[in-house]
Length: 273
Image 1 (cartoon, rainbow, N blue to C red):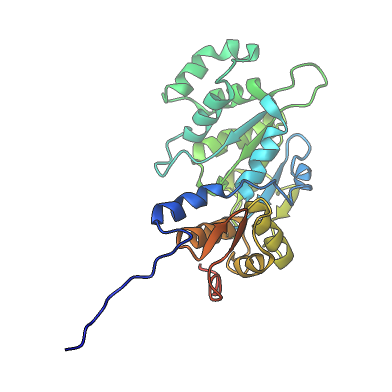
Image 2 (cartoon, rainbow, N blue to C red):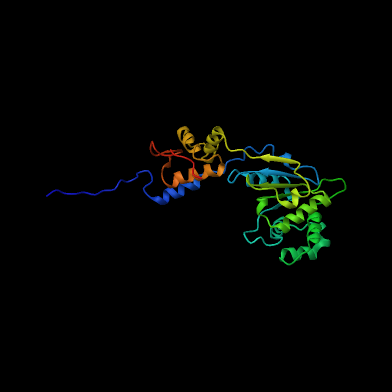
């Protein structure tokens, strides 16, 4: 009578799936690249610039970096959720802006500020005055602050109306970030065309390979950079997700201080859409 033996192959490098999952945490946050010309989007007072970025192309991060460069002179709006709560984006942006300190210029607008933060009904012109008081020039002849709007096509119409009105009436510069297939929100394009428009281009093969190395702190082998760069779909987010999937599935593994493909077939394929 013949004997039948069953066995399992043991991964001696990463025998436990939890180790493979934990290895994803070793991916680094690389320096922001390609944003050198973003300052041109902050146009003259009373106008606006547009950053057009595909999903996952780093548009939100670039807008955040631009906002940080203005410190407390920037008001960064983002969608408040799927509900499109009236003035919801403005409410959250103002709440973040005054979290550490309430500027003295807002003292005459205390009642309006309380209504906005409490999500109570607030007239558009009153909300506009509040934004102007927050970002207007602090001294005669000084420059005003800037309003930045991320995912502008998904921000509630009431917040957009207030920002657009403040732009025209009080000369605030505005920067909008929209997706490639999106239109410029009506409250802005109905008033005037953008003064500057910048399109974020897909990553070149060379840039994708360099970014793959940066995600791993330079630990990714040259062969792995070539393979995983092709899976990125031209976007930083796509590259990060491809690397994370490779690590979690153990197709890509940290071996000592290097990150390398586990098999000859690892990392070969097409970008997932």
